[in-house]
Length: 122
Image (cartoon, rainbow, N blue to C red; front, top):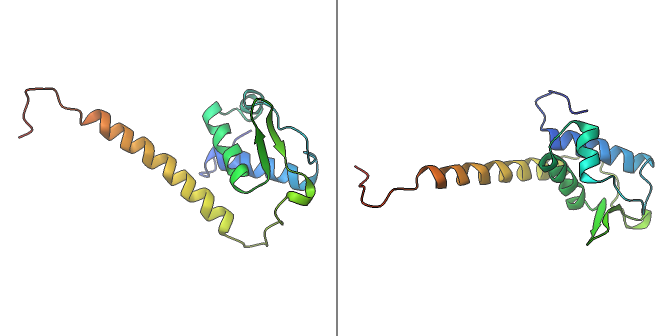
C-alpha cells in the first residue's frame, strides 16, 4: 500500500518491487504481476504503476517482452546492488518525476493558452 509520506507513490512502489527482486521473492525470469494487479495491490492508478515499472526498467532490473509481460532479469544480468548512500538511482528517479510533471504543466499551458480566432491578446 502506498503511504502519504511526501515521497511520490511510483517511487514507493518501485522501492518495494526492487526490494522483492533483490530479496529473491521475485526471482529472476519470473514475470511481474500485471499492471492492473499491481495497481490493486498498492492502491494506486495504472499510470503510477507504469511509472514505477519504468523506473525498474531504467535501472535494468526488469525487461519487457512485447506481448508477454515484464520479467525480472536473470541474476547474471542484474546490475550490482548500489552502495549505501549511492544517490544516482534517487537522482534518476527525481529527474524522471520532474520530467513527467513538466510534461503535464506544458500540456495544461498549451490547452489553456489556445486562443480563439479573431481575438487579440491585449
